[in-house]
Amino acid sequence: MLADSNPLVLTAMSEIVGKDARFSLVATSATAEGFLGTVMRMPVQVGVIDWNLPALGGAKLIEVLREHPNAPRLVVYGDESSDTPRKAMSAGAAGFAARSGSVERLLETCLSVAKGQMVFPFLDVRKLQQDPIEQLSRRERALLEALSKGLTNRELSREFDISTNTVKFHLSNLFEKLSVKNRTQAIAFYYANRASRGDF
Image 1 (cartoon, rainbow, N blue to C red):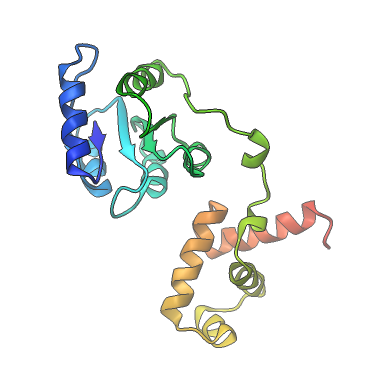
Image 2: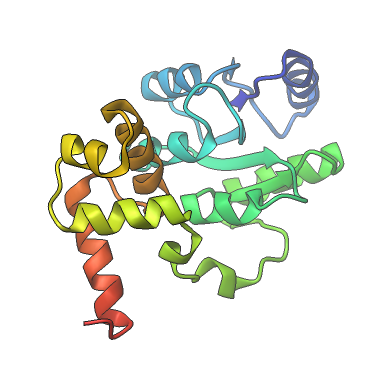
């Protein structure tokens, strides 16, 4: 299955895959929600997704599909010069194909992923193991520290002089960066991180 926000890219990819006897194109979608709806209804072995797929985005789509027992293996189709390959691997994608690469490279990546292999450009694995807290903005780190003290959204709003909706927005970004689902997990992550660094 193919999912890309650009209709021209989606049409071109559909034609290429459709003409290749090695593949059977199940469906296409221009949104993450459309992709999700299709794979929940019918079996899809491999999906090629645009990393910036509206409205969920590639990372969130992969996260949602991780909970699905028969989820397809996902190949992210994106910009290799950015940090996307590392983010895709961290999120749980099975492969990455650069938009600047050849069509044959994309197809070969899909075939390898279908066989159970992982296909990514060279990545410095040390970067995958970096402390996620170090990658937070100064505001996000301050918010996480305040959160660890048990402050409610309303109290955080007063503490940082921002609206509760802005608090929710920052918390959502914070949870995503830490790969946690709620404030309890974020607080646990914070204390575990401090303990591992000997900050207690």
